[in-house]
Length: 114
Length: 112
Image (tube, rainbow over all chains, first blue to last red; front, side, top):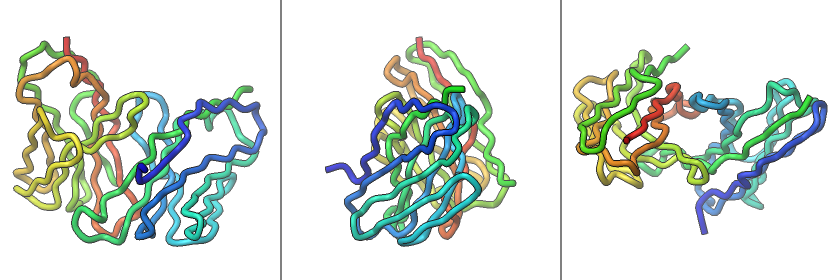
């Protein structure tokens, strides 16, 4: 079983739709959870960061972590064509040698159609 | 803002050439990383470094080496480029307790 699993998509939605992106993981030591957004031919940029379980909201974006199920989600409300990108989940254990390195999902490619 | 700068956006090299990819960060970060990104395979860690002159192998170090002579600079070296090293190469940096990594814009390397 891979440490982090993420459906690669592609996911295509109409403008204004609610988008749900998800990752599952196997390592119960993970405590820091992130979502990165990567536009075509660019490097990933940090979008959301969550520590341990719970929800975090930032504008149209909500990140959820359910540590009991080892499942994290990113919700995008009122999706816009400018949200079209690849979204990568990432997570890690507390810092301490290479155990603290981020582990990335493979990314989900999202397309929001006008 | 933290900036991670990769020296080239696009490179075309010939098989067998020695290739240098340069990465510079301007926020005094301790940790630096080199990844390659390929369709369907995601980000794969090549090498990382936690300090000057220190390096650790990642998941796919074969065919690559690195150099970190100064804290702000982390270089990836392809000793003898091959066509299967055609890829997007991404550099990243962070401090141990930072919220995630800061990535450069990437270098798209084509080996012909």
